[in-house]
Amino acid sequence: MDSRTQTLKLVQKLEEELDQFPLSSVIRSHALLSEQALDAWSDRLRDMGHPGRKYWDHPAELMYDEAGVLLGAMFVLVQAAITETVSIVRRIYELNGQKINKDAVMSLEAELDSKSGLSYVAIANGAANFYKHRFEWQKDWLGSASKQQETTICLVRSVGMRPERDLAENLLCALHAIAKTNGRQRDLANLVVEQWRGRLAIRLRSQFNLS
Image 1 (cartoon, rainbow, N blue to C red):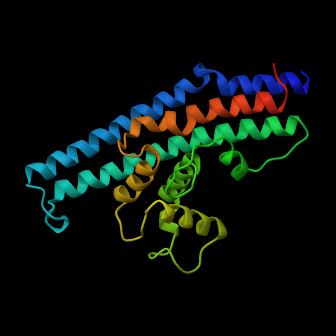
Image 2 (spheres, rainbow, N blue to C red):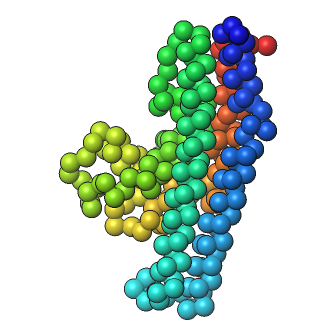
C-alpha cells in the first residue's frame, strides 16, 4: 500500500464515527456515573442544610471523594482518545516525510478556552496527568519536579487547580474550563475529541491534497 493510500485511510479513520463510537460511548457512560455521584453528594448536602465544609458528615466526604475518582478516571479515558488521535496524525505526517510532535498535534484545530488560552485538548490531557501523577508532586506543588511535572502543574494552575483543594474540586476546574457554564461531563467526548478529530480530518485532507 503506497503512502498516499495509507494517509487517506488514516484520515478516514479520524472521520468515521463508527471508529470513534466505542471509546466515546465508554467516556459518556463513565461521565454519567460521575454526574450521578455529584448529584448524590449535592442531595446529601441539601438534606443536611448545606453546611460549611468542616460540618460535612462522613458519608458526604466519601461521596465527594468518590466523585473525584470518577472524574479522574473519566479524564484518563478522554486522554486515551487524545493519545490515539495524536498517534494517527503523527503517522500521517511521517508517511508524508514530515515530523510533528505531540504538543503541536494537540494545538492543531483545537478549540481554546478563552480565559486560560489553553486548548480543550491540552486541558483534558493535563487533568488526566494530574489525576495519575499528583502523588509524585510536592505537597505545595513547588520544589524539585521534573520538566514534565512543571509543565503539567503550570497548566492545571492556569485553569484554577490548587494544591490545597480536593481532587473533585480541582478536576471540576478543568471540566468547567472545557464545558463552560453547563459543566456537563457527558459533553467532554464531543467537545474534546469528536469535534477536534473532524476538524483535523478536514485540515489534513487539504494539507495533503486528499480527495
